[in-house]
Amino acid sequence: MENPFKPGSIRHEVFEILKDEEWYCTKCELPAAQAATFKDMKLKGVKFATDDEGHEYKKMYCPICKMIRVFRKIII
Image 1: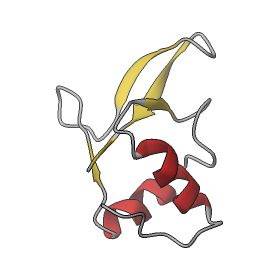
Image 2: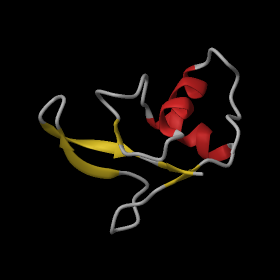
Image 3: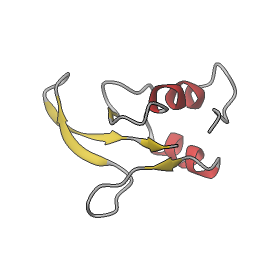
Image 4: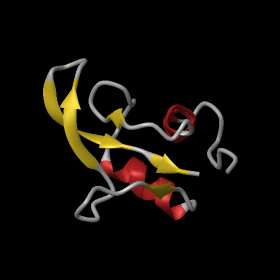
């Protein structure tokens, strides 16, 4: 999937980070990782990986901030 967002926008930047299909901490590794960002991404057809309970995020330990945080990952 090509990046559907305007270059220079936060959504474009978030997509560029997530496009390698790895999990990223929404606090430490993604700029402006707010619910609206991910909602807009979904509206453009971006699919998110889910946890075992079907949430479009995963709570994991972040080695950067050393806390349990919400992580996001896209599926291309």
